[in-house]
Length: 333
Image (cartoon, rainbow, N blue to C red; front, side, top):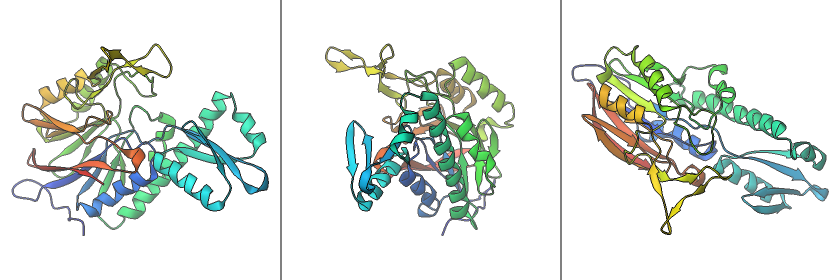
């Protein structure tokens, strides 16, 4: 059974949060995220951005009831219902969107980027709306809420699904200050600094700093704030990744002396906020390979990393009480 919410000052139990980020449309990983509420007996599920998948895969009908598709550079000829079901299941785990079509319809997409983008957003929004409904169903009758937001890879059009479905257990916390318990608030920002991939919701560091300042004006006590910032702090070890050559498409790793170059891709404004406001904790994602922790004065900061494409949910349990982190544990499964 999930722990009942009995929070506040003066000896109350800690509030236990489960945080994960960057699941990029993966059905398996999202369902694990919802199951974490009861499995880890937490009081809140906090998501750190990048809900949407990355690819759209058409599955084309051929003669005789067979299908063909192309995935990750390989052609797939699906001759049985079992093969088709397994292929779709694999796409769902990878977080890719798919649709069946006949050859004539497929030709209407070929070379038509606007039509492809329209279909992509349609299916992405449909999946996100289904996820909101699923969260409401799974968390009904509990005290647990799921706090969801977008990241740099998500589009504003698709994120509207967070507001359009009836909600009780799901909270769209994007660019908002919302209560976590009687003593703590959640401050959420889903933007990242510019990337070589030119994703939909990138902002300059000064722009992110401006959003932070605006939100913090509504926080009465910064030492009781939990920062849910998609972008990690700059050069913190939570943001280390390969440096890419943005002059080619797709961007490729830069090589020096035969070795790929690594660098910090985080945000200086996030670093400044952690150092200046000294919140309870910083929860971050964005850089999948930089699982770890750092400290900024009294404030710990975490990035649980991501392996969504393998169907693995990486996360972290954080217990907060009286403006402090009283326990944490990285998870993977």
